[in-house]
Image 1 (cartoon, rainbow, N blue to C red):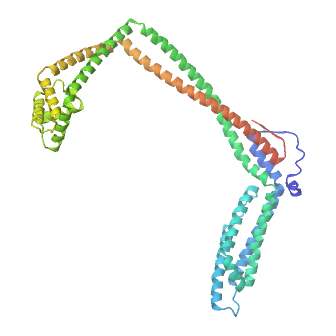
Image 2 (image 1 turned 90 degrees about the vertical axis):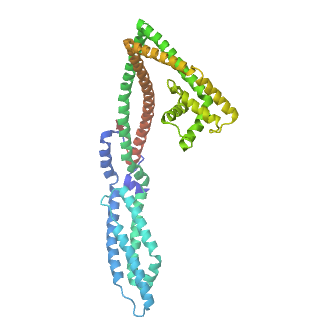
Image 3 (image 1 turned 180 degrees about the horizontal axis):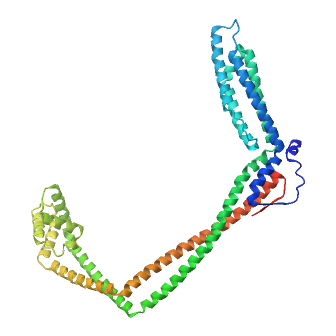
Length: 428
């Protein structure tokens, strides 16, 4: 306890409140830490000097061990083993010396890092030479003795260094995190300002879009009451009726060729295999009837249908009798009537009427205006929905961030008071 008081003083009496601007806090902490840790820094500097001196002594001891001679009565095999084990010990001592870099900065946090690194390196050196030390101790006792003294001295100095630091470890742990905590608070404050500025902009954009939407909806309602729109709506009904009729004709065509589907697929397979080759015209007709029979209208396919009938009747397509009968009956129906021609004429007539109605509709300026306006209103609604979601997220994130920053501020005040024994108020 006396040691801690020597470094930090008595913490029982906390002085009056000190106000510090957040922008000046880092400089104040640096300045105050120089005073607060002055005794500790002095002790660290002393230990660094002692460690440096011991490393120099270890270098000398290493050289003495390297130059040590065998005793006159040493057996050759033992001398050989002693030499190799001495080399191993010297090699590990060299690694220890090379890897030991004493910090120029006497900051306590750097001292902790130095302690951890050197303690690990020293342990590795000793672990790697446990067996070698026994040989060296036996064959080169004097050289071994001075080396071991220096190694033990290094270990002791490291423990003494950590003893100083351990006395104030809790304060140091908090102190080393202060810069990071301050940076987090500053970044969060900057983010809060950006979000605070952004929310009114989003709100203004939201209101502007809402006004535009209301204006556009009023304009659309007015447009819907105009004579041109009434006419356009009537055209739309007629266009829909014609589209439905054309779609119905196409469906009827597909139904007419449905009974031929199996025969058509068999014929396609034989054509592709080369077993029954079709002319290019009939090959195209076959593909059309399989993929989209409605497109066959307007083409003379009677000869092709008769070719299908022949293949069905002579068994080339391998259809069962019942299926073959239904196929030929449908072919007779198609070739023996003008049903396909009638459907073709009806579709052509409806298509011509549809084309005329579409041209008439496209000539209506108000129709184009309505289409553009409806597209614009759709865009407004999409943007409004997107901004509503953004505002909701932004407000929630802002509230959460403000709460988080307040907690960080409270923690920072507490940490500063704990480390520097002062009642500190941060001005933001």
